[in-house]
Length: 129
Image (cartoon, rainbow, N blue to C red; front, side, top):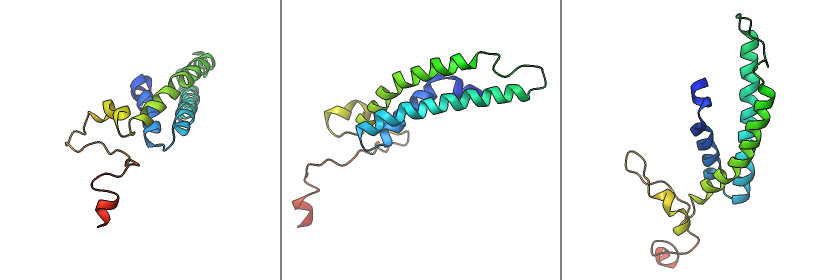
């Protein structure tokens, strides 16, 4: 587990996916960094509790985790908001989310996108006739 959470890509993907699954841009900008900050605090508290229970004599908090929590917490707020916003923009139909929709899942199914507010040939008046 430490290998997964030590890499930055998993944290960045988390912030992006929080934004992707939120309906509003404001929620994405607020919840992504908040979730990252909670994750940082939880990660270092569990890391210290595991060190405290280790029989090899390591002391909890000896690694300076308090300063690491502050540093990574600030970075979580600095990078979490833009990544959450990018995740939300990825679902926008049109040119705004085009870059994110260029990729497809491995099995070839397209990434689901929110329906457009504008009626098209398959929605709106033509579909009700």
